[in-house]
Image (tube, rainbow, N blue to C red; front, side, top):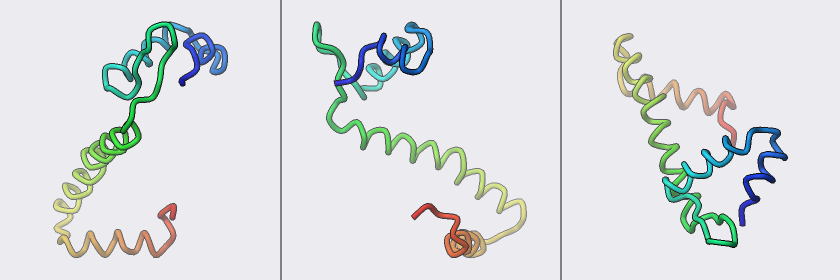
Length: 95
């Protein structure tokens, strides 16, 4: 069960209407659902759905831009892969 709109509002010190708007967005995206008289709950598969959406956003924001910039610099796919591998070797990843 998700805390109520008023509980979240008090916890984060934000307007209850802002919380309600955010919760309604999550309902529209089928991340949470309402049980009349009982509250809001996280829908099954929500984590997977959020992860897929974030991966898509990651591609659109970062990978596409990386490829575009690499192309402008006349870098090959192999050059880009080497740079990414170097980043992992230098400890830039969080694993």
